[in-house]
Amino acid sequence: MSSKRTGQLRQGSQPPEPATTRLSRLLTMVPWLLNRPGVQIEEVAREFAVTPEQVEADLALLFLCGTPGGYHGDLIEAEWENGRVFLGNADTISRPLRLGVDEALALIVGLRALAAVPGIGERDAVARALAKLESATGSASAVSSRIQVSIDEGTGKEAMAVAREALAARRRLHLRYLVPSRDESTERDVDPMRVINFDAHWYLEGWCHRAEDVRLFRLDRIEAAAILDEDGTPPAAARPRDLDSGVFTPHADDQLVRLALGPGATWVSDYYPIESIDRKPDGGAVIELRASVPNRPGVIAEIALALGHAGVNIVDMALSPSEDNSQGVVAFWIRGDDHAERARGLIAGLGFPVVQA
Image (cartoon, rainbow, N blue to C red; front, side):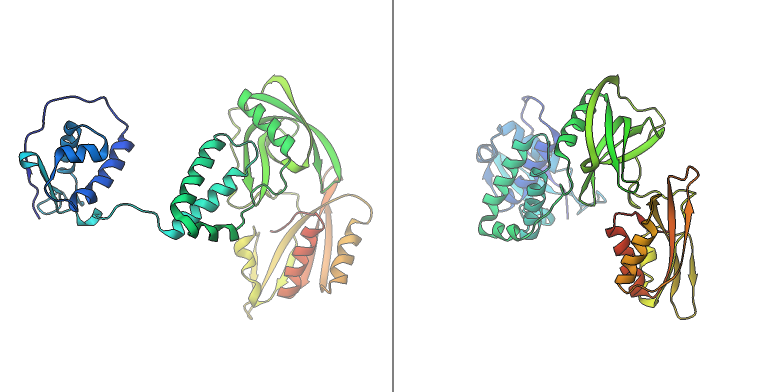
């Protein structure tokens, strides 16, 4: 495969254009030219709404493009002898770029979910892009209506609006925040860092002056939020948390919970943070879990009764209180993979954070 260039580049200058605009035109121009060998430069210019000089400049650039290597046979052949354009050695991009049906439907579903986000900016741009995609896909877009994506479950819309305003203005927030594990409301001053969505819940992440550390606040648990007339820039040491392992952060004073799991439940250790795994000869594992609970009368009995009514076999349990005695961590040792999985779901359903240690 050879690279060949003929014709002289005409004199003239055009105002600069964005590189993305030119790249888009070149990717469309190559298959168009391959299907029309010998087309006049003037016709190419009319088709792509540019000047003949710009067409020649594009051809000169295509002459330098090709597959990796840059040797004989790697580059596109571009000729424009006597005002007629011939293109060769460009079979790898001979077809116009088009979205497949699956790709288009994925974009439509994503844009619909994005359009439903409270307080999103550029909503008109999202709506325009969505309308173009639906028009281009025609009846195929109807399939996307069968897929529902919810990313605003548990959204506190008022808290969301206040948090976004504070972020934009770099102002401190005063929050009244419900802590479900202790069933109490706390007052906090927070320097907002970002608003994020994780596992279908919206969170405000910021520097909490009460905890003197970065904290996540679920928006639907913010009972009241007010913007203060104080600078809300977080300290230089404040860093957003890595949420790859989830929103729960284990603490040194948390109680370890040991679960006896059968061979079919060892997948649990791949999805939840663990302290240790004690492998048994039968392939099963004993996994320790931590469940935070408030220090209030009857809390242990509430969990134990719920597990008992569900038929969960509790081998043993223990409670470790925190230093200020305001809360604690209860450990359950449960035998059997089905029982352990059922127990984890029941405890979480009661509103108590539970993780594998």
